[in-house]
Length: 415
Ligand SMILES: *Cc1c(COP(=O)(O)O)cnc(C)c1O
Image 1: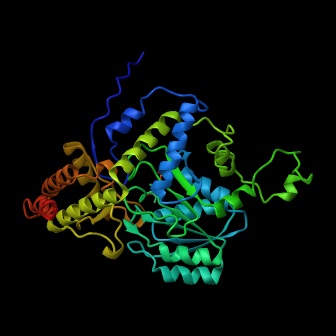
Image 2 (image 1 turned 45 degrees about the vertical axis):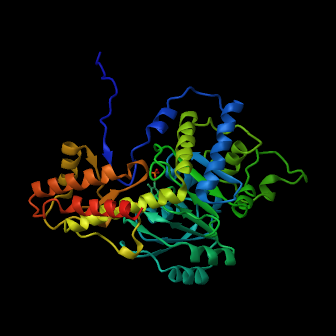
Image 3 (image 1 turned 180 degrees about the horizontal axis):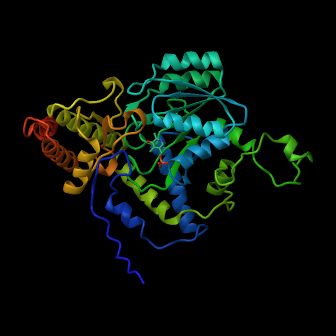
C-alpha cells in the first residue's frame, strides 16, 4: 500500500488578500479537546464569541454570530434569508465581489439592478444615492473592500439615505473587518458579512455576520413552519407567512434560534473553528481595534513607499485605496506569474495575481492581520527586488527596503 508522508506544510510568508498567516495562539486553540455543542462550557464560549463580534462590528445589535462555512456562506445566508423572490435589489459593482453579490441575489429570485464602475475606482456616494431614489429598491447590496481591485467604497452617506427611505443596506465587509473600521451602527448598515481568513487572521471556514432588528423582523416573518402546523390564531402558516427561506442550512431564522437562548438544534457547531474564532477575536480586542487599524496603516505606508521607491507604478485611484491590499502594475513585458512563482519557491513568499480584466496586469499584495508586520514587509520588498532584477528589470539597488525603513524609523522617532 502507498505510504503517505506525515503532514508537514512549509512555513510561508503569506502576503495575499487571504488566507493569511495565523497567530500560533489561534492555531493552538484549534487543537483543544472537543466539547459537546450543548455543554454549558461550550455554549458559554458561543456567548463570548457573540459579545466579541458585537465589539468588532461596532454594533449594539442583538445578533452577531458566525455562519459555518467560508465567507460566501455568510453572504448566502444573509441574502437568502433577506431577499424575497421578486424584490428589487440594487448592486453597485466595482470589482469581482460585486459580481458575486449580483449572482447570489439573482439566485435568490431578486430583480437585480446593477450599476457598474470601471475597475480601479469606486462610486461617488451621490451616484448610488441617485439610483436608489430612482429605482426604489428593497435592498442595496455592496462590497466595502474589494480585494480584486484593492479599492474601498465609502458607505456612510449611502447608509443614511437607505435608512431614511426604508431600504435594507447589506454590506460585504469580508476583506475589511478587523483591519479597517467597519461602523455597522454609525453607518446605518442593516446586515454585515465579515470573513475570518483575511484581517482577523483565523483560518477560513467561518463567516461572522451581524444584523439589526429591522432585518430580523423581515427574516422571522419568513420562518418556515412544518407542513400542517397552524399558527396560534389557527390559520394556515403557509398563507399567514411571507415566502419561506429557500435554504435550510442558511436559514438565519433557524440559526438565531440555535445561537440565542432557545438553543434549538440546527447543525452541529464547528467546535474547533469556534475555538479558533474566539481566540482570534480575543487577540483582536486585546490589541485594540483602533491600534490594529493603525498597525495596518503603518505597514501599508511602508510597503507603498517601498514599491514606489523601486519605481513600480501602483494600480488604481489612490483616493480610494483599500489599506490592506496594495495592487502593483506588472511592468510591460514581464511575466507576472513567473515572478510570483520565484517569490514562492526561492523565498517562501506568496503574493496574489488577479482576475478577469486584471489578470496578468497586476500583482496584489495583502497586509492583513498577523501577516501585516514589519518583518514581512521588509522581507517581501527585498525578495521582490531580487526577483525583478533576476527577470531583467533595472532597479535602483536597495531603494525599496530603504524607503520602507525610512517609514518605520520616522514612526519610532515620532513616538
Ligand atoms: C475573500 C472575499 C470573499 C469570499 O470569501 P470566501 O471566504 O472565499 O468565501 C467575499 N467578498 C470579499 C470582498 C472578499 O475579499
